[in-house]
Structures are given as C-alpha cells and as structure tokens.
Image 1 (cartoon, helix red, strand yellow):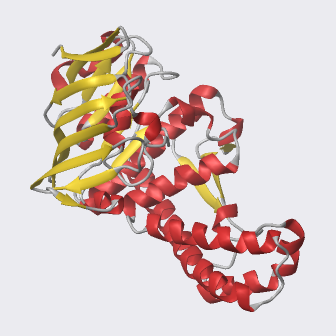
Image 2 (cartoon, rainbow, N blue to C red; image 1 turned 135 degrees about the vertical axis):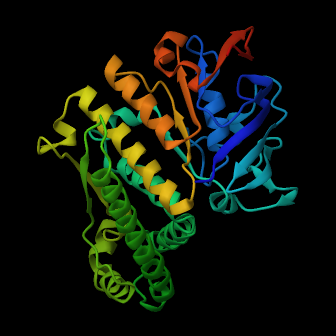
Length: 365
C-alpha cells in the first residue's frame, strides 16, 4: 500500500505561530506542551489541506495572527500515492482563503482528490448527547472522506434551500417560483442521502472485519425523506403549505440524524459512560481510516487532539498499535511526552511552547 503523509509544513502568521517549519517523515507525529502553547493550531493548519472549514470551522479572518492581522499562509509538501504535491493555503486581510496545488490555483474540493484527512477533537466528545447538527457534520465529514463530490452536493442543496426558505418566509405562493429550486434540492439532496448511506456501509464493513480493542458502534441514518430525486421533488412540492406555515423547509437531508449504539452491549451511545462514548468515537475514526485505506489506496492523515483523554493506559497503547499497524501519519497532541511513551521510536516527537504570545516548535526525538 502506498503512503500518504506530509514531509514538511510551514505556518506563517497563523494563529499563535509567527513562523513555524516542521520537517517530518511518515511516522506518527507527537506534539506536546502546556495548554495554550499552540498545539491544536498546528492540527488546524493540517486540517486545511482538506475541503471544508477545518477542524475549528473558523473563518479565514479568525485564523490570522494578532495583533498584526497581516493575513496568513500555510504550505505543505504532501506525499500521496507515489506523487509529491506542493500545497499552499493562504488568506490576505481577512479575505476568503485561496488554494494552490503544485503552483496552480485550485478549488478547495480539489484537495479531496489528492488527500484524505480525518480528525477527532475534544469538542466532538459530546457528539452523542448534543444536537443533531453536530452528528450531521460528523457524518458529512466521513462521507466527504470517501466522496469528495459530497461537498458540492451539500453546497448546492443548502444554497437552493436558503432561497426556498426566503420565499417561504415572504409567504410567496406562486408554484413557478419554487419549481426550479425544488428540482435542484431534490437532485442534490438525493445524492447527499445516497452518499451518507454509502459511507455508513463502508464504516460498518470496516468495523466488522477488524479485531480491535475499541468497541464497535452500530450506526443508523435517521432521515424521513424519499431516497429518489423524483420522489423528493414531489414531496417538497406537496409539503409547501406546511412549510409556508413553518417558514422553513421541513423535509430533506438537512433534517437527518445519526443514531449510534454500543453494539456489544446494545446500549444507545447517548446513554454510555464518558469513557465509552470516547472509545466509540475512536473506533469510528479508526474504522473510517481502515475503509479509506482500501478505498483511496492509502490511510488518511489523522488529527487526534488530546486523544488520550478518557482513555486508560491499555487503550492508549492499543490505539497507538492500531495507528502504526494502519501505517497512518497521525498528528497527536498532549500536555506531556509520557502520554505517548508506548509509541517509543515509532513516532517523532516535537515540543510546542509559547513565550510572549509566540508559539515555538522544537524537535525532541
């Protein structure tokens, strides 16, 4: 199996990093240091090498280093499927970020064709007990990892739905105003729904085939909508009166939810302990990575922020073993190197410190 990894990443005026250059190999990368030192900022920078808004979902303006606010730039040397790509992501004066691949301007979606990036961050620890929006986002990130075009379908659907909702709020009743919008929503919505189902099938298969120290999750897509585009278009038309009363669209993939169950115990994920919920999330990320290794031809880049939290020593060691067996370049953060002792020489270790508002990165091993 061919590899996927970064051999260099440079951050310029990005968050707390005035300038940082990290040279590395294909092994996992450990970033340790005190809270607030800038570890997660490095993971966020790596996450921007994939379509979307990154692991924090921040605007380009929010990513710029203060107080200079000059804009920022990230460059990377990406090894992917026997090819080497030079990546550049930047923003000037708070403007939307720009992308270049091998010196040529490219849309963000093009990144999904040469790289796959998955992440697990502390904000996701409450995935199962918070609202459906976070679970949809989690599901869409999984779907996007398999199907880069999923982002285009989602954008098309959301744009058409916003225009339809505006008509609904203005109490427009003329059918001709809705027809084209509903046709676009139906086509994109059906593609979104099919993509999500395909992703869940791939994740389920990857869990069943693996022997792992982490519990498997049974996943179900809860979505009360027709699966076929023609049927969804008809349903949107039939539902206009109810939508007019509500002032918004009440059916479609934007109303979907992801339901998870701790398979071995038959307990809904939302009712599991904090540690079990974390273990289920780790299990899903690993399953996603295994399925991608088969689908894409290489395991994805993994971004695991404070990954050891809520995992006991045995599960920490098991996680590191699985990452190394998978052959993934996992970028992991923690407050001290002792949390990653079980990795030994299988990882490269960097210390991240902060002095006077400026983050510094130093290679330790």
